[in-house]
Amino acid sequence: MREHPSRSEISKILGEPVGFDISETASKLRRNLLLVSLVVIVLIVGEIQPGADVSLFGIKLTGVTPFKLMIGLAVLLFYNLVHYLWYCYELYSEWSIRITGTRLAFVTGGRYGAVGADYPDNPKQSTLYTWWLQESRSMVAYEELVSKIDESVSAIVCHIDGLQKADMTVAGSISMSIQGLANSTLQVRQALEATESVITNTRVPESLGRFDNRFRLLLKSQNLRILLIEIGIPVLLSFVAAIYLGRFFIQS
Image (cartoon, rainbow, N blue to C red; front, side):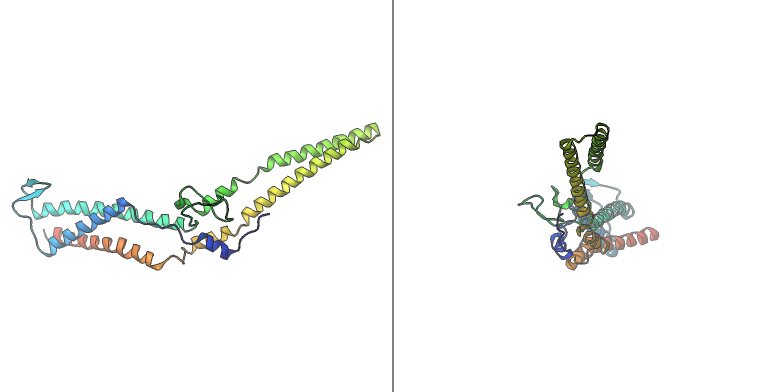
């Protein structure tokens, strides 16, 4: 049976979750959200109105009024805000899952060198469930082994019945049948030990503990950066812009 590493050793193997960040698309949405929010706030607070010659991508536009301009900005603001909040939810969900995985950026040694660690092709796919699936595939099917034992027992019974009928002994056949039964029993025992090793592995309580506790050892600076800089400020500005837009439409 494989020896289990201690929970402290598993904790070192798990380390920190693979670094995560918002995607390139989410970064563009955040930039657009900040831009639209600032434009709305500056236009309303500064009481700036479009001039007679308004151009968009080099095309001059006529008939542009403050009300029409704000409607267009409101549509852009709403779309970018909803889209960005959706990405934020997916980012949080991904983080909640990844904290159960091991941090192995590259596999340079034996693929299965560390007990309690998993080795997916993509390090971001390292989770408790990936490890469990990897280990479960190494379990032997018990039906085949049990069938072998049944066959060995049946063979012994047949030999014993034959001896009783003939009133004689065939030591060689009995010895071979018993040896086959012993080998099958040993295989069953080894399979059960391997299964028990997987089920009782300290990886499970350690990973689940981290999952339930939201990985308390995660660096606080990373959380603050995500919450304040990448999420808090853009969302706050968008809500402020939405409030100013609401007041503008009410007054209009």
